[in-house]
Image (tube, rainbow, N blue to C red; front, side, top):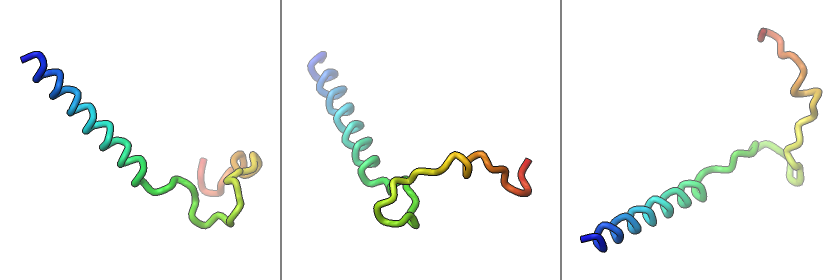
Length: 56
């Protein structure tokens, strides 16, 4: 009985691990699509600290 429980838990953990890894591999990249080739995605600090109009 204990062997069956251990086998079930290990199979469930394996399925969960494969599912998690597959979702991460199949997920779209988080970078911008419109960045030019070769750019590293660096955002200057001035752009981040500049206040946008219409926002408090």
